[in-house]
Length: 161
Image (cartoon, rainbow, N blue to C red):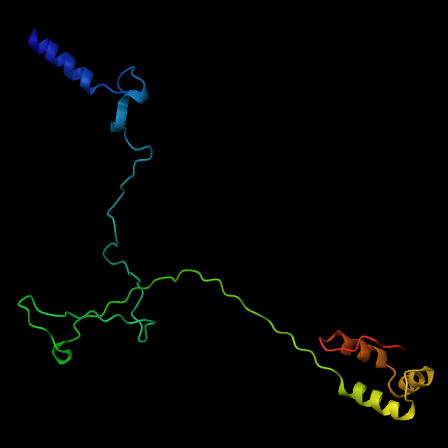
């Protein structure tokens, strides 16, 4: 009788949602993973496979020297007692950094316009109709150059012509 009861209790303990009418939520934390990893073949590089790796560079960006200060007995090491025994290089991608570029745009003023303007003042003192006629004769595009000059931070704003 005890053997029958023992077998019945073991069957109840071993039952889960897959082999009984119990709901999946009653399985608790003993569930199998949703996507079990299938292992087909050996892991890692196989014999005869030509591997590839990052090779050490001659001039790394940064060198960190790892030197012991003292021996376990308490002896302090001097620089000339240390021997380089190994080099290891770690290739890291740096964190992205916001780079701000300022473009400075420069303009130039046509010096010919300024010279012609001042020379015309030798013929006509004020900015009147005669002055404009002389400017049109000597430099047909003078208005364009005047406007370009006035767009600069230093300008004369009271042109009367």
